[in-house]
Length: 209
Length: 328
Image (cartoon, rainbow over all chains, first blue to last red; front, side, top):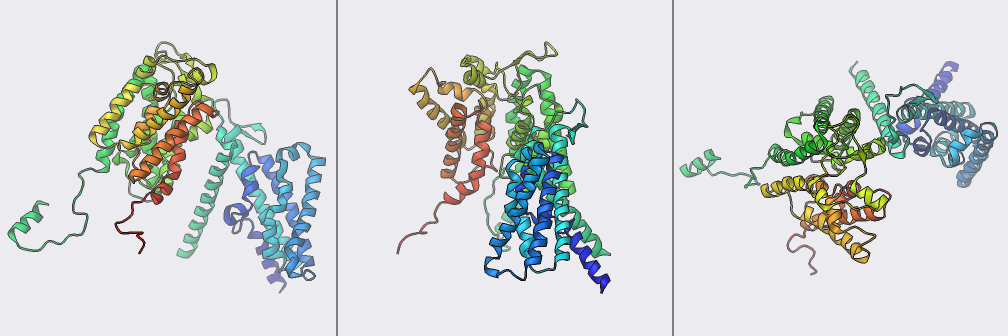
């Protein structure tokens, strides 16, 4: 029994990292994915802020799930999410002003990030606190990884740098398009294609065995 | 065909065939190779004005397009169609739309994007929404915005390693209020993209295509005509502030676009009314961008913009079948 629940907890965590990885498989949370991934640093900061909000809101909503009237649940979820978003926003502004400035309005906009409301609706309101926590950890880390990998490609090609450290020499002429919205869409589409391609190959491999 | 007639003459058998009964002798490779022929005067003019560097850029673009098409079709397990000539044309047009000093890696990147994203992702020739060459050029415009607007003066590339950089006639007019001699524009003795400067070379190629019957006259006429009318109205209103229609027709990419890109069979509408809407809309847009936009040139974006509307135009200009829609 204990093993079972450990396995299912591990599953709830793991699914966010590949099977349900938010922007690339669920195509949720695309707004921050496109808007703030022009560098790795911004991508990771955005991902971690979302991870924090997701964990707190999932746990809170899961804990309150038996006391909430169904008719008003969405309103309550938004208020809960807004509370943690405000905390994250103020924390960033106080501790990391440059990052807060770079992310601009996208930190407050986490309130309307559909990943968070989606996990609340699809998972936290039906499950106990610990599975909800694992679910939030997995999805949040998957989201952070996705934003970081988008930021990796865009920063490398758009500026020739990684984490502000110049890795490509003077011969490299930066691809300005990669730091523009158009480049974000191109990279996003390429990542979706890559993730689909890998999982198709995986599926084909496992079915033939 | 001869066998069938022979059979009919013998009266051996009743021949039942499904439509189409009349077939054109045109084929995709035939049309494409005629377009390649039509582009030769333009290529020759670009080599004349910008030296062998122009030829190098065009060759690199063509080879990159062919390699990309081959690679994508191999990866996707599709029949390889590089022999049909469409990738050659895309490559030639990309090369002709770039400035002489453009880096060769950029030429490759634009060609790769044009074929891989602009054409093969949509399903290959005949399925692409946007003109692949223009899409590649637009990608380059966003990727290397400085390099792609670093023009060189004509006939300076051979003489020195560092060619003399210069502004295009449109940029001169827009930002410095300087006019350019119409004769220079007509023969191509101005700064600009390799293939867009020489009006006479483009006209020779375009009229050859028209003579071969592969250009629908509505498209260049509608595009250039609406450009002339709209710019003419502004010119009559204030000839000092706005350039003459003749200048607008001869400067920039208007001629190259009107003859070789607006007329792209895949990305232009199929109905006569739709072709008028498409061509006139593009011409008006190009002039509006030139006169009021931030950029000096608007031909590329105007054609791409109208490309996006082609499915919609086709849908709403479909001719009615006889008797359809009559009230009882």
